[in-house]
Image (tube, rainbow, N blue to C red; front, side, top):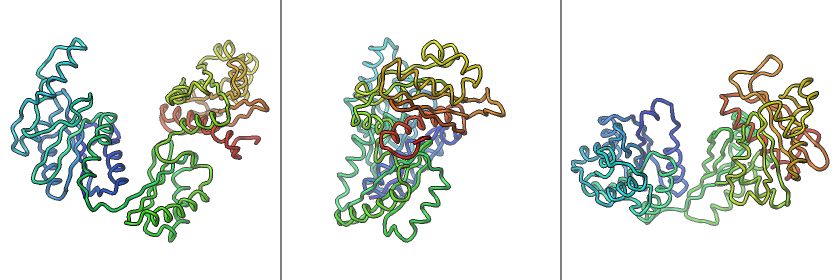
Length: 418
């Protein structure tokens, strides 16, 4: 069964926003054994949206459309669909009641802008009428049309909970399709490309994919067939070869994130962690506490942005700061030791650096970051140079710091002096 994806929004075609909805929908559909024949992104233009929908319906069994369901003036998907399919807009009473209840709870007046969200093409059926995230679906000339919100979290929920199960239920002759995802950190794209060259001639029918997902890189292995056990054997064989080539750069598989992996390792080792952050501004602590159950291993953290706070809260000496500066190996070592001792954790992790875009120098340019780790036996540090925007440098710094914990607990020969 094959289909298309249409994403709507000026922010997508202008480059202001990454098209995460198309990426996610295509990945979920492909992993389920469905064919995505085309992905189209269009701006908030009535003619372009209409043409994209008509074209998709000519060649597809299903079409998934995201965006344009909101209350602003440029949210016109409902009206465009109604005109394109010659289905008059009608007030969906279920949707209108939800909007009224939402407005009442928040003390918001019902306006025409809100009311228009409840006007749908005739014959539409709501997706998830009992929930907060809603869309609608239509059947037109035996083509199933799904219209989902552009908000990524809402779109993903509806995609996984309602849309994908319904499409799969209609695919009676669907072959077995299996996909595995491996997430890497620390290897750049050229190095991964070289690894792919070594795999030439070894992949068989397996489709090997590479997807940058800053600051990570993802490798996917996909195989379609009718024999589940044969598919598993082939995937296992290639997976083993990939792990031999990339080693411990693989930090997770499937849906796990770095902070999930680190949390599991800390629990397994019965170790606790404390964090001292300067340039990352609390990002490491934020990521760690995003994981349910993190109170079992995360003791706490401090954001020490100024020299004074580094001295007062962590005990970094004035002499170290005056002689070596806040962004230095000597300072990050004292930060790591200080947070470990004062919060009484097994491991003390520290980061200090220059996130930019200003503040760099010839000796310490923007992107210079030091990571430090204090254990019961020793304290380690290393200097890095990260590139990109301020946000990217902070994200990369947090990723590297968490990867230190992962590698340390795994006993990988990665940290300095180990």
